[in-house]
Length: 100
Image (tube, rainbow, N blue to C red; front, side, top):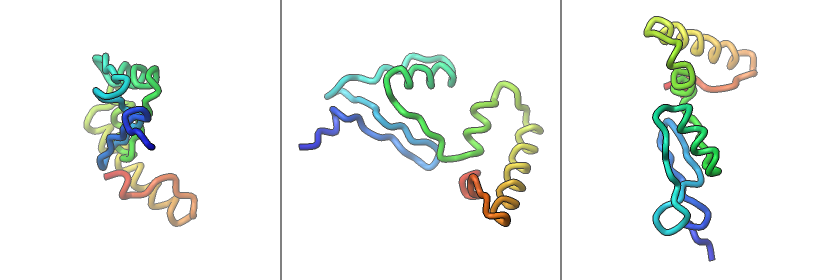
C-alpha cells in the first residue's frame, strides 16, 4: 500500500513545485532560513526538491540582489526575444508562457 506520508507530499502551483515535503504523520520537514539561498540549502539537506516552473521568476529570484527595476524589464525583454528566436530556430529552452 502506498503511504504518502512516508514518501513525502508535493506542493505545486503555477510558479513552483516542491517535492518531498513531510508533514505531521511522517518525518517533519523543518524550514529554517532567513533568505532564499538558505531556504534552498535547507531543503536540499532534507532531500526536498524545489523547482521553478516560471522561468522569469527563477531568474528574478536567483538574481534579486543584483537587479533593479530597469534591469528586470531588460531581462524580461531579452528572455522574450530569446524565446521567440529559439522557437523559430527549433532550439527552444523555455516557452514564452513559462515567463509569465
